Amino acid sequence: MNSKIDSIVVVGSVALDSVKTPEGETQDALGGSAVYFSLAARHFTKVKMVGVVGEDFPAPHRDMLSTRGVDTSGLQALPGRTFRWVGRFGRNLNAAKTLDTQLNVFETFRPKLSEDQRATPALFLANIDPDLQTDVLNQMTAPRLVACDTMDFWISSKRQVLKDLLKRVDIFFVNEGEAQKLTRQTNNVRAARKLAEWGPSVVIVKMGEHGALLLAGGRVFPFPAFPLDTVKDPTGAGDTFAGAFLGSFLASGSDLHDVQALKHSMVCGTVMASFNVSDFSTRVLESVELSAVRQRTREFADMLSCSCNGTAAHTPPAKA
Amino acid sequence: MNSKIDSIVVVGSVALDSVKTPEGETQDALGGSAVYFSLAARHFTKVKMVGVVGEDFPAPHRDMLSTRGVDTSGLQALPGRTFRWVGRFGRNLNAAKTLDTQLNVFETFRPKLSEDQRATPALFLANIDPDLQTDVLNQMTAPRLVACDTMDFWISSKRQVLKDLLKRVDIFFVNEGEAQKLTRQTNNVRAARKLAEWGPSVVIVKMGEHGALLLAGGRVFPFPAFPLDTVKDPTGAGDTFAGAFLGSFLASGSDLHDVQALKHSMVCGTVMASFNVSDFSTRVLESVELSAVRQRTREFADMLSCSCNGTAAHTPPAKA
Image 1 (cartoon, rainbow over the protein chains, first blue to last red):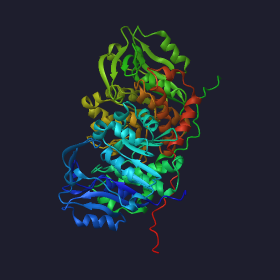
Image 2 (image 1 turned 135 degrees about the vertical axis):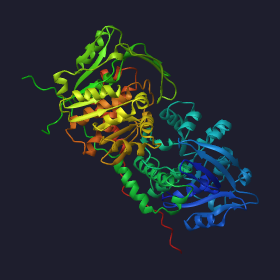
Image 3 (image 1 turned 90 degrees about the vertical axis):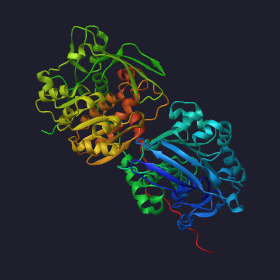
Image 4 (image 1 turned 45 degrees about the vertical axis):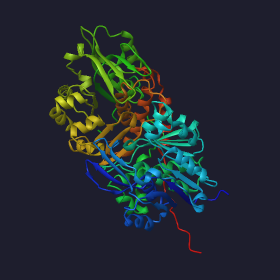
C-alpha cells in the first residue's frame, strides 16, 4: 500500500494574463495557477490538470501542455471567454496590483472529476474558492496526499470554510501576509505553527523574493530565494514553487515525516520558481530542461551549505 | 606578515535609546552602533571601542563593557549629555520610525585615535558621517582589513564622499534599501555587484528579518535569518551582525578569498543578531555565552544544509 505516488490532480485557474512589470509586458499570455503548477510538476510526476477555458483559448496552448506531458483531458472548454487577469508589478516585485479581473467561464466553474481523476492518489487545490476546494476533495476516492494554497480574498470572505478544509490537508502553501492574516499573528514562525495546529503537518510560508519557511515535524527551516540579477515577471512563482515542490516530493517516494526529502523539495521549488520569474508568462517553464533544473538545484544547495563546526574564540594573550 | 589579525578598532555611536516595539519599551537604555558591535565581536577578537559619551553616561555601562573584555580606553567623556535616540517599531519590525534624535556630545565628535589604536590591524567604521569615517581611516598606520557601514542619511547628503571611501574598504555592510538607493539599482544582486565595482571585495546586503546576501569572489550567497517566534527589539541587529561577522572572520585567520570562511561568518553574524533581537537593548548580548552561540550556529548550519544530489524524474510507464 505504501508504493510511490505516481500522479497528481491539480484543480485551479487557466488564464490569459496581461502583465506589466518594469522589465516589459505581455498581452493575453498563458497563465493561471493550474498551468504554472502543471508545467513545473510535469518533470517529476504525472500531472492531471482540471480547469476550464472559453472558446477563445488558443489551441496551441493546449497542444503545448499535452506535448509537455500534462494530461489535459480535464481541461473543459465552455461557451464564452477564458478567465482574464490584468496586473502590474512595480519596483516591489513582491506585490502585484490587480488592474482588472474578468472571471468569464471561470465564474461558474464547478469541477466534476472523472473516475480516473477521483482515484488519483495526490491532489493539489490551487487558490480557488474554499467551497470548491472542499467539493473537489469530497470527490476524491482515497487521496494519500492533499495539498492546497489560498489567497487573501478567501481569507476575508470564507475564513471558517478554509479552516475546516485545512483539517483535511497535509501540505499548506501560503504567502506570509496571508498566513499572518489568517492566523492573526504578526510573526511568520508563529503563524506557521498556528496553521499546523489546524491540521496540515507541513506548512510552507512563501515570502516572494525573500524565500520561504518550511514547518515540518514541529521544526522551522528557512530558505532564501535563489539570487537573480533580473526578475522579469513574478507571475506564477508561487504555483511554480508548489508544482516543483510536490512533484519532486512525490518522485522521492518519501513520506511527510522525511524532513530531508521535504528540504530537498524546498530547494527544487525555489529553483523552478527562479527559472519561471526570469522571463514572462510560461516561456521558461515551457522550455527548461530537467538537467538545467538539477544543475541549479545542486548549485543552490552548495550556496546554502556551510561547514560550521565551531569558531575560534578570543584568547587574551598571556601576560609577559 | 600574514599572521592572524588579533584586534579591531570600532568607531561609532554610544547612545541611550528609548525604544518602543509591540513587545514592550525601554527608557534611556544602552545602545549605539559601537556598543552592539563590540559586545558581539568581543567573543572572537580584541575590540577597541572609540566613541564619546556625556557626563550623564551611567558608570555601570562602562564597567559592563570592560568586564566583557572590551577596551573602552577610547570612550571619551565630554561635558554635556550622551547621544539619545527615540524610536518606535511597528508590526513591520524591519523599519524603525525615529521619533527624536538628540546628538548632544555626538554632534562635535571628531575621533582622534591613540598610537595603539592607529596601529591596530583591523577597523570597523560604523554608520557615522563619511567625512569622519574617512578621517579615521586616514589616521590608521597600516590597516590590513577595513570594513564599514552607512545609513540612508549619508547616502542622500554625502554620496560622493561615501563612494570615495568605498575605494579603500574591504568589506561593506549595507541595508537593502540603502544599497539600492546608493547604486540606483532596484535589485539587491545588481546593487551588490555595483558596490563591489566601486571597491569592496566583499559586500553584505542586509535584509532585516529576511536575512542577508553575501557577495564574495564575484559570487552571491543568500542567507535567511534565523527563524524566531518572538522578536522583541530589532535595534542594533545590523551592528551586532557586523560585530560577530568580523570577529569570527578575524578569529578564523582566513583571507578575503576564503569564501567558506566568509560563509561561516555570515552564519555567526546571523546567529548573534538573532540572540540580540530576542530581548531589548543589549540584555542578551551582555550575558550570552559563546557556547550558546556555537550551538545555535551548528543548528542553523544544519537547518540550511540539504543533500541535493539529484531528483528522480518522471518516467512515463512503458506501453503495455
